[in-house]
Image (cartoon, rainbow, N blue to C red; front, side, top):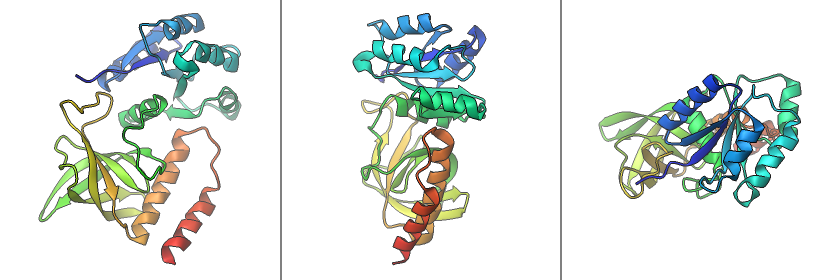
Length: 261
């Protein structure tokens, strides 16, 4: 049976906490709501829970944010507690304070369930579905068509990297199968060939906080497809992280030159 990961919900009010908790339960997590720093610390320190990730409301009334989050991390298992900030994107001053507090993951509204789920799994340090090449993965929540001969079925991209994708579908192909994916990307639709590296299906391998579907490893995408994928990944990564971008334009130009050589 799949285990529901424990997630601390640090909210600004009971109604907001309850709303977020209901949403997280639907995504396969077990939320524990706190409205004050003391309540949050009690939950993190409780040995009945293994809190390694928390969702922090951007409206939560926390004084001396860096110190407060540092105290919470000190009570977490192994001293590790990753935060995902959730809510309406604030101004530059608040963004700077979040960065100074060591927060790198965000889920700004409007936030699709796929993005929120992805960010919490990322905060939990779940590397089970990581691309073997170590490429950056991002949530995209875009439509994808799985092509097979004359037939095609519509599915949803849960995550994307330059090396592969996780396709959300209740009927994934078998591990090792060759598939063609038609990706709907901002630069236009592209078709890439891939092989199924793993599946997430009901049974012993089912992970409750992940959607049903399959991880696909790309096989020699065309230069145009590779550039479109890299561009989509870069844009999505900037939208979900507080980390400063590392010369995105330069990296895309280098990729294009490498693909043409």
